[in-house]
Every structure is written in C-alpha cells, then in structure tokens.
Length: 116
Length: 112
Image 1 (cartoon, rainbow over the protein chains, first blue to last red):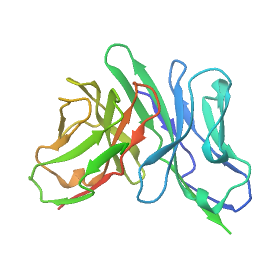
Image 2: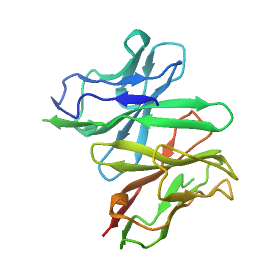
Image 3: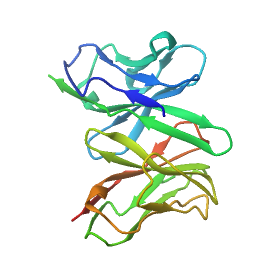
Image 4: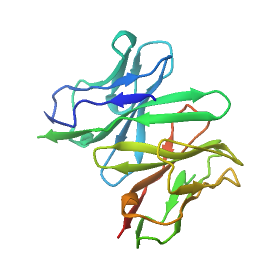
C-alpha cells in the first residue's frame, strides 16, 4: 500500500518567517501529489497539486511545493508566514487504479502555530 | 453552488444503533468518497464511488456501507455503531478520480 509521511507533527514559526513543511511518500509510479489545509472545525481546502511537468508548483495563498523524485518528497514552502496561515496541513498521494477508480492516501498532518 | 454538503453536523449514538450520514454535491462530480479523521491518524478512506451504481472499499471499510443511486448523493451507513467509530467524517467529491477533491464541512460522531 502507498504511504505518506509528514515527520513534523507540530511546527511553530514567527509571523514573517519562512516555512517549510515536509512530506515523503511511498509509491511505485509517478504519483499525483496534493497539499491541503484545514482550519479549525472546517473541511479541507486544496492548496496546490502536482501531476506532471514543472516540479515546482505554485498554489493559493502564496504557497509553493517542489516535487523531488530522487527523494520521494513534496515539501511545502512559504517565504513569509501570516498569522492567518495557522492551521493543519495535509499532504496526500492519489493512486490511479485502472478500471475501478482511484484512492487517496493522506499523511497524518502538520499543525502550524504562528506567533506574532 | 452549495458544493459538498453533509448532514448532520453533530450526532451522538449509543452502541448498536444504526444511522446514515448524508452527503450531497451539486457540481456533477463523478467521484465521491468518505473519510474518517482521527487524532494523529490523518484522513483514512472508508469507501468511494466512481459514478452512480459503482462503489468500492477504501482503507477502513469495516462497519460501514455505501450506495450511489444518483450522481449527487453518497450516503454512508453505520450498521451497528461501536465506540471505535467515534470520529469526524468527511465527504469529498472530484470531477474525476485523481483530481482536486472538494470536501464537505464534516460530521462529528460520538458513539457511547
């Protein structure tokens, strides 16, 4: 089975500082990769996705992520964090299955705290 | 568009009771899925559907049933609730299989 690892359970950064959230995956073929954000009591919202092509992808709210096949990683970055970025962040891998559809595997999440 | 809607928002059940969590989407999406979210576990896929009349099991299907009679609706049934099913349940939909998923607001279920 595929797996997604987010090694950092919780991260605290100061407002204005840069941010990098780590994500590693286990998947045989080229994966479909996603980052989602979840605010307290809310559902998940897509930040960005990677399917193919340019390995540096831009997302909403100033986030970007870089796909590195050699490291099986898809780390999320933001140059300057805002207080409103405090939330839970999930990395996910989509697996295509011929004939029956697809499954998604989520990491356990990284909780981000932003201090003023 | 309302997007993905879920009802109820909160539910308390006693062990052994059954209930149905409702999910609907108005985006004409083919793919719909149910997840449960538990602390420290992330989201785990329960069941999914690639279109009306077609469903399949995800990572943690035991104790849950689904059906997809229309494109819009994808209810999740708990046959005999157990305390281990205490969780937050999210429904999601996407235009096609491996694509951006749109999530509902969630249902917080407690089984006593």
